Amino acid sequence: MTVLLLGGTTEARHLAALLADERIAAVTSLAGAVAAPQRPEGEVRIGGFGGVDGLADYLRDKAVTLVVDATHPFAARMTANAAAACARAGVPLVRLSRPGWSDRPEAAGWHWVDSIAAAREVARRLGERVFLALGRQSLPEFAEWDDRPVVARVMEAPSMVVPENWTLVRARGPFPLADELDLLRSHSIDVLVTKDSGGPTDAKLSAAAQLGIAVVVIRRPPTPQGVEVVSSPDEALAWVSARLA
Ligand code: NAP
Image (tube, rainbow, N blue to C red; front, side):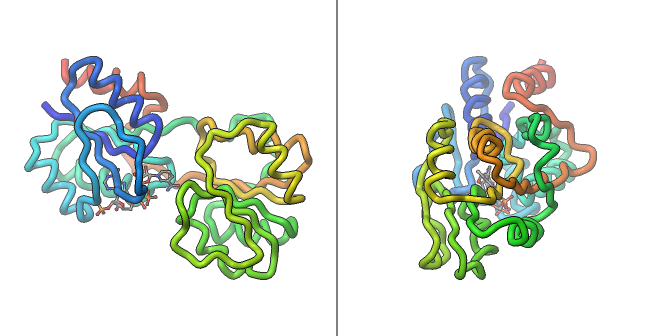
């Protein structure tokens, strides 16, 4: 009995620890995109599977009995591949996706969009000095903004050449409210662009609300049809335990 845990998130690490506590055999899979990832407890494998075919082969070769997709809410390709490969291999799958930020009181005043491209167009109209809190992979879609001041916060250096008028902030969250207020004020930011990632990096949203800064939020990609969803590591553990019982 082996559980494959598709990781890369704090929730995946919590679940790996819970499974280890319960002595449930599990392997966490990481994409390998981060140079020094925070390693979860238990066995770890690193690197892509090679699409749906590669993942379906892996499930069969390793006799995987259950899959928990605890990748980031915006890791849409991996989530789609997991749904297709598990359906093909007949392996039960659950999506662990932490709650987004849409229930926050300020959310009704945000500018909700469906894509990075739409976020760019809306943010362009809303202000001049933009804070991009999107992760490095999305930055190339803003590369044409080499004529305006942009603050981009990333954990790892982006692969793109960053325009001269951008300020790159290398940091790993979560960030205290006082620091977020300071960042927004010191760069005179007038628009914040973020994904609806959910989780603990939400102080930027409180800071933007306090300072009256416009907020553009990219909606999550939809979960593939028919895939069960849970929203916490405890719920995912209950799902696994129920199937192993
Ligand atoms: P993605 O676009 O959905 O996935 C691209 C490819 O990366 C997948 O097709 C797969 O390659 C490989 N991959 C992704 N997650 C994997 C995993 N856990 N184990 C093995 N291979 C994986 O994903 P992404 O947005 O590039 O994110 C990559 C990783 O970073 C994810 O694990 C995610 O949890 C984490 N992350 C993403 C974000 C974000 O904003 N997107 C933020 C924080 C962390 P193959 O097709 O070859 O199998």
